[in-house]
Image (cartoon, rainbow, N blue to C red):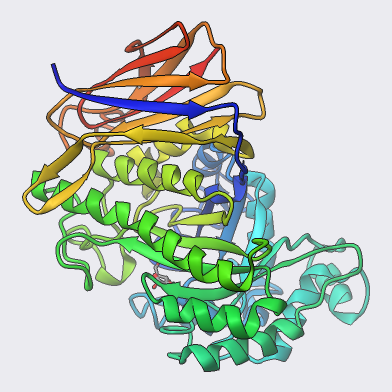
Length: 494
Ligand code: AHR
């Protein structure tokens, strides 16, 4: 019964490291991404530590979030860091022109961001303002954060943090082809070089400089940036969102959808593989040693906003479909781990393909959260190449492999295998040959639910959650897995 798939895991030919920065999460000043979702300030009705809600921070800690990208997004190219330091009641209240035209209190600024990082246990990826800021403003922000001495360091001390912070990653603007300044690639390359020149950190420390990269299939952008600016850079970004039902502007319903929309969404997600292959090819031309990495620092589903919400807040429900989008992307990043050393899902809380949704005091974990939790052993693991000969899954004009997967040898020394069955109707029986690997046992967990649009709500928060999986056996160097329809399975081999 069901479809058969064959696969081989090449444990004898270990690949690159699956960089933990691939699990970076993006948190922008957008809707309730920061205010309400993470930061509640002095609101005593929601338990918090130094303004950050305890429930959300605990959930994020459980994911071992390695890096948080902040403050945008489009927000970054209009953000002036000085407005977010000093006494909170003296900070200017601005208008968030990108996202809903609401007021931005500047209550969360540099010091609060580093407090969030401390609580979550994550590292900083800060995007600077190229759009309407100067190279001097950007350079001074970097100095304020990182310098051990000097008047900016002293000002930082007066504001409560004497010691310099670490700044492992810095973005030179965001989407310079769009909200970051509507630049041509040639102009953006020059501007990027100019700003990058002045990002200087103290001796003995390192900040990875990430240029604002291409939108989807704009290979010319990557070509020009690599040709003109790669020597000044450590990474180039790529933004690609899964936008079903005709693309931009997003109009698909996050919850009320049929199988055609399911297939459309998953097929659009597979396009990530083609895009990374294409951009990598261009990068290989200028950087065959793969020194400059590709940071897919915005990805995820983008649907129409939930009914009754501010359309500028990009608030959307998250269903089992989003879980599959997450696992497919995480598998694709494994295949390209030689070039992709960072990615950031958009976004962390309450925005787009969120991990966590909040409503006042209430919080739920989304299906996407559970995939990130199940894939934790991938962080800094070694990729084990996997060949998958999968039958097709198709619905209407949407055709794709029915099974997605990846395998790693974790830092715990164990082999972990992720397999997703995209077909919502048919079981898939996967027979995996284990080359260079002797394993005697297997255990695992599964994420599935009754319907393609099953999701968690504040009233029913555990409709979609991982459960023990018993559909896998190992014998004679072969792993056999019976994947139920519409499921994500993660296996640990012993
Ligand atoms: O994630 C939402 C927005 O999408 C970001 O601000 C921007 O970079 C992208 O267009």
